[in-house]
Amino acid sequence: MINRRKFIKGAFFTTGALWAASRVKGASISGANPQLPLVISTWAPNVKANAAAWEILSKGGKALDAVEKGVMVPEADPEDTSVGYGGLPDRDGRVTLDACIMDEQGNCGSVMCLEHIMHPISVARQVMEKTPHVVLVGDGALQFALANGFKKENLLTANAEKIWKEWLKESKYDPMDTIKHMKTKRGAGTKDNHDTIGMLAIDKSGNISGACTTSGMAFKMHGRVGDSPIIGAGLYVDNEVGAATATGVGEEVIRICGAHTVVEAMRYGKSPKEACKLAVERMNKLRKNKLEDKQIGFIAVSITGEIGAYALREGFTYTYRLGDGVDVIKSADFLI
Ligand code: GLY
Image (tube, rainbow, N blue to C red; front, side, top):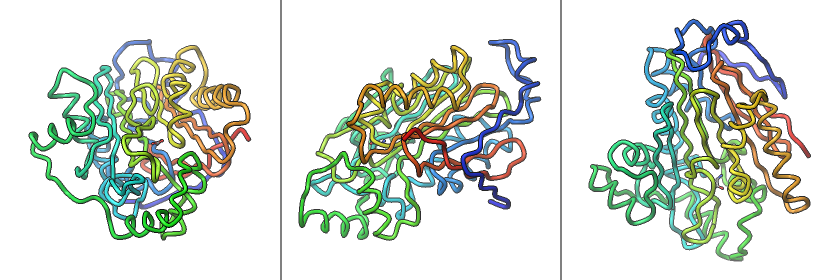
């Protein structure tokens, strides 16, 4: 249950430093770090998702279980038009979902362009645990889900259908204009301006896992896949270093292997925030003037429990809970 909240605009912190200094690289963690357990998600409304993850983390549960349970909250929320049930459909009116999950051992699973299944993150986890593969797509992913007990459901809510039908009147194929799409969603009753959920957690044993799930870009071409289910783009976890996840225009994140770039920058000494900033700057340099109207945000956590975030432009929020169990919501610093 959410009891206390803090909102800090643009702030950034580094704690757990003493604990971090005493940690021998690669050694197992005793759980003495006051930062742990820890969960962080993209976008302020995902305090609810963090609360679900916290149920597991606070009882000494595994980060992998926590991130799965956490992101299932927006997946099942019909008012969240960017993730799972209630997500805005593609240009053909089909709700197609992308999700991936990764644990502290480098195990990972992903589904892309999956239809009719409420919890793509759980299918991704089963791809990881029950198959020799990492990714299943489209009909193959659906077939696998149904064979493993998932129920086939209609994920297109009346609200999402209404917004899609409005869009159909003009049928302006402008999938890159994410800011405009966010405004459309917000105008349709979504309380907050937000997008894909990426969630990272470190459990009391010091193990990191991550999950990322989305309905992707509204009114996309059928079959379009963004960064969210791509290991290394939308999500990356390395238990020796930390983890990162992304939100925003997936095409731009894929181009720079976003989450992996952030983790590698941390490996070579950048703080989580500096690493997120480096990735955004690299994207901006690569794409020069082609990022108008687009938003991209990264969040990252180091294995020591340090948190950071950075966005291309103003408006990206993130939320976390750590050792003290207090919900914190922040606005990320931004480049342009
Ligand atoms: N980041 C979500 C997407 O581009 O699909």
